[in-house]
Image 1 (tube, one colour):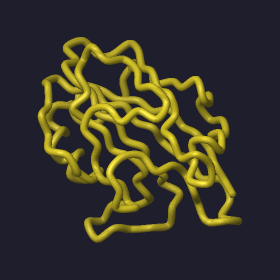
Image 2 (tube, rainbow, N blue to C red; image 1 turned 90 degrees about the vertical axis):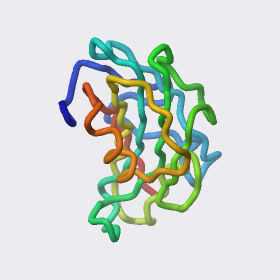
Image 3 (tube, one colour; image 1 turned 120 degrees about the vertical axis):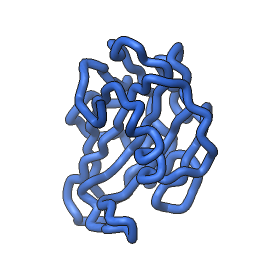
Image 4 (cartoon, one colour; image 1 turned 180 degrees about the vertical axis):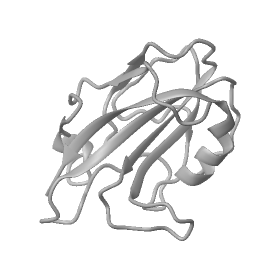
Length: 158
């Protein structure tokens, strides 16, 4: 099906869609991932992947992607519908800081509002992907299996 928005809903107790992300979940705070929970997955969902991406970052990678990736997380089983704050569960990919796991928002000072898209992707098969995939690699591997997706958008500025 490819990357089509669906009825799956992604939410957080830390912030609502379109609201400011609390400092606790940023690079200037404790830098822990927010609690996330999702519901209403597409029929046939067997696994999930999650990405946090800042498309407002003025960076273009060698592979042609844009923005800044803060988190890739995958190999999440279908019976999981939430992640606790600061979760280190499941398979962590590499972010644009070169780290495994979550590194929160920290745009340049005075750069204005940046939007952080927390994407949940529902897949039609279980995955056993290797750790350390970047966003581009992850998307390339899962694209044929994406049933649907949606996002939660948070805002942060310094």
